[in-house]
Image (cartoon, rainbow, N blue to C red; front, side, top):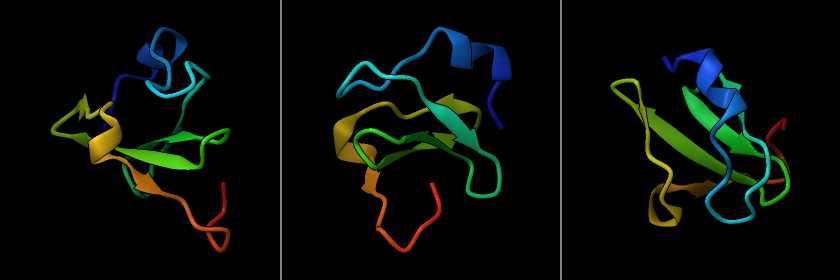
Length: 60
């Protein structure tokens, strides 16, 4: 889980856009780049190398 207040100040490392938190997968989602960044032990792994691409089948 991530502190929701952080969502106001953190941004996607790729496009600098807004991130949203997807609680069920514990990921930060960039809807513009279709990337999901994992949150590990409450810390967002905001590295492009750690992100996974969100497929068109997944709900954004």
